[in-house]
Length: 414
Image 1 (spheres, rainbow, N blue to C red):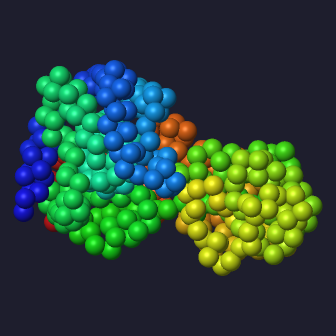
Image 2: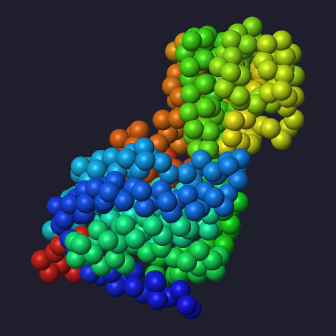
Image 3: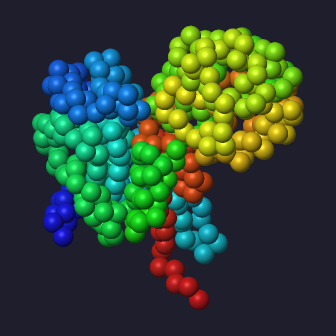
């Protein structure tokens, strides 16, 4: 296959990757500085991608780089450099009655393939986290971000070369779809695939990959405004969850409100209307909102509006009569990413935390915090919605596995 050379080069680089934590951290610091230095170049290349995309496309915001976003990326890289290296930790050890000393230590996952769409920041994030944890990264970005990704990988390779490290520790595959198919079939070269993007992309990877997959699923996010909820908290939390950055997976998709609090819905939704959020309301909430919400932004909800990841200035509103109905609605429509409750009832707080099945479950806080940096992980390679190996924001620790070390003095098994 024409792509095997990429995989073989990565394999060779993996065998040679034996550098100290001090060197790793210095490379990351150099990369942060170089990213800032190359801001104009990165923005110029990013603009080429933006020029090819309709600004109304929900992916436009994800694709867009700005000077501030590059500064934030550089800060994340520095943060990762300052974190403890998770490799070589003794996770457990014991001496058996026969004298064998057995220990379990943390090691890299190996070679990680990441398939992603219009998210050039992922290129920086994946390299940073994989390099810090001794993993090799093979990246397959989408064609929408081809100029941006090529520019970013050239900056990374420049820094690696400067530090006399094989640039093949991170590889950006060509943009054509065949490269993605090759990566999904790279058994023997790649240890795990992590998809980041639309539900369609994630489904394709899960269904076709011959390499093990860690699924980073879509974020269909709910926030339940309970009967005892504080109106000020609820207004601020719902507004922030929905509008802070609508194109990301932790953005709010459906506000659930207890019917006893429908009288407060107009006040709760007021900031949303002022910001231009379209609401798809169920029958009871529509009756309330039509008296105050901007008419051009209010619509009656259909079944298709519940269980939808909008990734835009749109959201649904669902009315329930009981706390249990709220739990049932979330269970029926959640993607198990992030779910929140706004309540002053201690029993409902604990019940929600214990019974809601999601990677991140919140009480009286915005779901916008589901993010590797916000969780103190430095950055993230994705947010896993599955339960095997990793769940939630995947930082350094989640990019490690372990192996057993067994030391003896000549023991044989009877």
